[in-house]
Image (cartoon, rainbow, N blue to C red; front, side, top):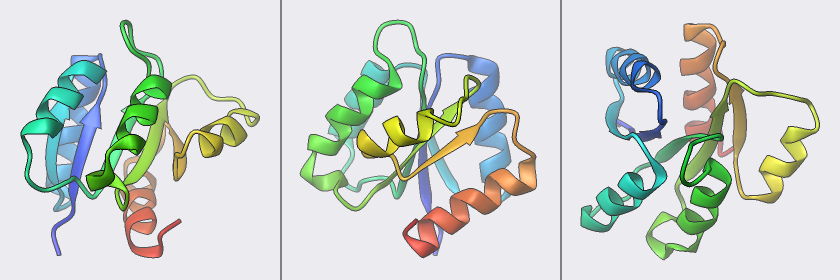
Length: 126
């Protein structure tokens, strides 16, 4: 099964690397450069993405705000949500879980570990 990942990040370079890397790994990928763009695209889709990869710190609306809106959408109840962030502190994991994130991944992660973490989240229901 080809999983669909929806990546949201305000940094074009990060989105390019994520999209390229995940497509190479066999994922179907959609992306948005902001939380609002993500929400607009989701409204137009018939099928929900299997996994959302959300940047935490974005200018207008943060990943924290975005996940709250995504979790309200009944179509996304089975979608996995992962925060993908450069800013990391161990205490952040508790906050992310409380907001409904299935996992937290640092942006400086090794490519194979990154892909493996997404696959684990999708298959194990982390």
